[in-house]
Length: 280
Length: 331
Ligand SMILES: [Zn+2]
Ligand SMILES: [Zn+2]
Image (cartoon, rainbow over all chains, first blue to last red; front, top):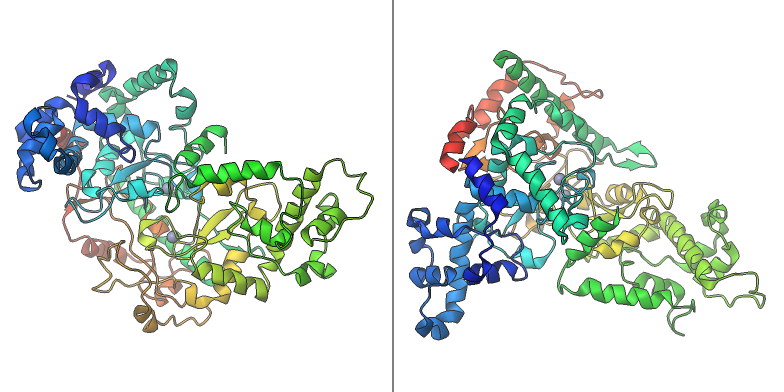
């Protein structure tokens, strides 16, 4: 099933002209974190179960998203419908990005570092992934998850800081690394992902190269084969951390806390290594 | 930091407010390049002018007395070319008639910047400097930690080196004890050595009431604290005491992120399970810190922790997460 998703991505559905509302939405400033939801997914009502209770004017909002809205009501309602269509698209998006095809689309964006990079110095510009703190809409704005330090950061721009986190959901980044363990970033060293994004983007050649690479990396056989051999039991030992110093000397209380934290880390590493040993 | 990264950062400007802020800043900087006079206007001193430049928001104004005291400048004259001219520029002293030996005013300008930066590194370690910086800190001039669960803790500028020319300025958060890249590209031209490695920590040693304690216990109100809810309420701090009088006296923001898949905690047994929570974790009490010796070993290393772990994760956890199940669900 994943394989089919890969083909979809590589052939690309470039039917932009027939997808007016979604194209417009995706190209609007501030909506850079969203990916394109396939029309098939939206048209399958099963995928939208329950959303009619979440969004006002559900039917017209859905018609607007799929460019089926009657021209008659378009003028009167368009303004308020737009807000509802955005909400509906966001909630559909949250469901879409945890499907195989949705994950693949988000991985493309991730590889181009379109969600920004970790502000933590020791993470060396690790690209981020969007995540919600809750799956309930209208509660919390979107945050960014770093796969290297495994922590959450606020988007730098207020444009992104005001997006509802429920449009990405709590599951997405973790499911991504679960399904694609080869994409789990290393805990140290420079980031390789997205490094050629700036130089390659814009040119057809660069895009093709990225696509080719993506296709290779998303091949399920490769992904799972690599995944089985991956051991993450002791990766934490490689993580770098900042050690505050005054005139070169460590600070008593902070040094003590950091020693405690590292002891917690070491305890987890030996626990995981024991588990691994028992399993083999 | 290469050119493409820079482009990426510039793309994401907007630390606060207007999105176009950086573009405006850039223009100003370009004008400044063509600026040949060191005395921009008659009333503004060079120091005030320098500190008001875009990207120089983190600098405080060093008092002229401090700069005029040779003792404070010990060793700096070997690091700054055109020392005398740079000093004159920084202190707004009319230069000597004979300026013919200076090839270009812009060289003196960069010397003046280097001189000021290095003096600044020393000044902010003095009582007067610290007190100027704490005012800026409390006014939020340095911004706040980008980490969600630091709940908007204010940060201070810091360097990773005391030698100029090696790294740009970074921001230190006293809650997570970590350092971050400033959110705006305009700080990418600011040398970290102008703030130095010591200042941030001397600052929080001096102002212990601003320094979060190394332990944290979830209270009923803060265990599920929302990162959006207002932070640092005074009443909360009033009841907080760190038994270590030399330690941080502020209640920490101690929540650590727990990743979930479909509402289930991701088990540490999964390959993608959490590996980094230790980095942000705090013990519940001050005494627990003493359970680890100076070499980082548990003093009482028994098997207790296993039970503790189970207890803690009693809520729905995904044990033995089976990726195949998920693939089916996903497809
Ligand atoms: Zn990170
Ligand atoms: Zn922090």
